[in-house]
Length: 558
Image 1 (cartoon, rainbow, N blue to C red):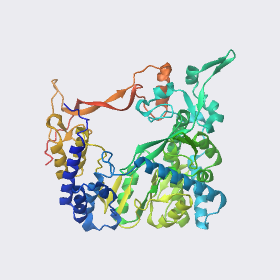
Image 2: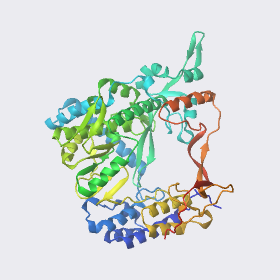
Image 3: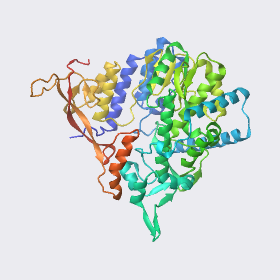
Image 4: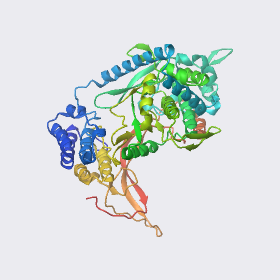
C-alpha cells in the first residue's frame, strides 16, 4: 500500500493537470481556453512563458484572468517536467549579473552625486534608519540562536542546534578579529569544545572559510542562489536580525505579519490609490556602498563584521560586491529597513498629506499608507515615480512584471487582487501525492471553487479519505464528518480522524549534548520556544491521529 505522502507519479500528475485545466477553460474565457489548448498539446513551456498582465484587465475579464492564472500555476513552478531550462545555469547567470550591478552601484555611489531630489530622499532615509536602529546594542542584548537551515559545516538534512553545537566552529575572515569577543558570550560552549594547546592553557579551534554558494528551487525556469554561511557568522547574523526586527516593530513595521501588505494591496486594487512595488533580485543587489552610505557607521561596522565577504563556488572563491544575500540571517531585516526608509523619505520629500509621529522612538500615528515586507513595498501611487528613480540610483531594478501602479491589479506577499477579488491560484510544484491532493482540495473548497475541488477529490483514494471540519489543518478533507463520542459522560464534543506527519529525528550522541538544557533556557529567554533537540527538518511519514472538537457542522461540499 502506498503511503499518504508518497508520489503518485508523473502520469497521474499530468492527468490531473489536464483535467483541472479543462475545467478552468470552461469556467474562464478566451485566454483560459488558449492556455488550455497549450496544455492539451503538451506545450508546457509555452504556458510558462505566456504573458498574462493583470493590470490590463477590466471587470468583464475577471473570471478569464482568474482561471488563466490557475492554468499557468499548474506548471510554472513545478520540478517534475524537463522544459528545456537549465535552472542552475540561469541562477548562476543571475548571480553574476547581480554582482556586476553591485560593482556598478559601488562605483557610482563612491564617485558620483545623485540628482537634487534623490539626494534629499537619501538624506532623510539616513535619518530614518538611524532613528529605527538606535544605538548599537551590546552582545548580551541580542538573542543569538541557530536557525533551522544548513551552514558550511552542517548539511541541511541533519541541521539542528545540536548538530551545529557539535560541528567544528567556522567563521569568515571578516569575523576573525572579533571572534574572541563574540565567543566570550558562550562560555559553556567554549569550555566544552576547547582543546588543550599547552601546559599554559586551552584554545577554541575556529576554522576560517568563505560562505558556500547553494541553490534552492524557485520556478520552472530558474533556481535561486543562496549563500550558505559559516556557523559563527550565521549565529551572529540571527541575533542581529532578530534585534533589527524588534526595532522595526517599534516603528510600525511588523515583519512577522504579511497581512498588512496583503490588505493594502486589496485596497489598491479597488480604488487605485496604492501601488505595489516588487524588485528583481533585491537581496542580491543590496550593494556594499549603499549600506555604508545609509546606515550609521557603528551599525555598518557591526553588520560588516558578521557578513561573509566572499563565497566559494566550484572551488573558486569570489569576493562579493553585494553586502549580503539570501542565506545571511539579517538580510531580510536589512532590506526591509532600507526599503521602508526610502519609501517613507520619498513621501516626506513630496509632502504628501499626513505622516508618522514619533515620541521617544515609538510610533504613535502612522497616517501614510506605507508598508514594507522585505522587498514587497506598498506606497501611494503619487510617490511611485520618485521612488523608482531613487531605487534605480541605489542600484535596484524594479520588476515591472510584478509591480503595479495603474489598472486594478495588485499583488504583495502572496496575495493577488483584481478589483478587490482574490485571484491567487494554487501552485502545483511537485508530483501529486495523497497529501498534496488533500491540500489542493481544501484550498479550492475554501476559495469556493467547488468544481475544481471535486476534480481533485475524485483523484484521492478511498482508503486514505478522512473528513473533518475546517480550521484543523489539511490532514483531512473538509466535508461531512461524524464525531466519535468519548465514553465518559459530560463531553459536549467528540473526535475525528486526520493525517499527521511524524518528525524526523537525529539520535546520534555528541559531546556537546551536555549543552542542550542551557541552550534551551537561553532560547526561551530570546524569541523562540524550546523544541525537541533531536528533531530535524522534514517529515518522516504520516499517520492518522484523533483530533477533539466541539464543532458539529455537517455538510456536503458539492
